[in-house]
Length: 66
Image 1 (cartoon, rainbow, N blue to C red):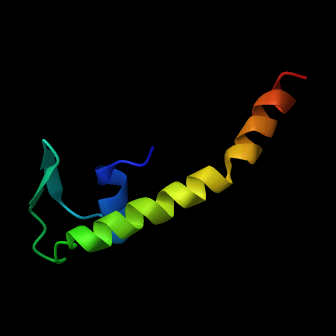
Image 2: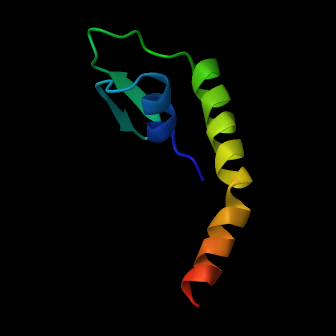
């Protein structure tokens, strides 16, 4: 499951921020804070990429057992 932290860093690499109880505290002076829509879209995109690799992760685990 993709988390909020991963999504924000994917949108704004090296951003400075905190997350407390699902609320982002934006500390970065060089980048603008992403909108909730941008974050939700990125969570969905990253989850789709992760899910698409499920077969590869499964095969690697089985291959490693050989």
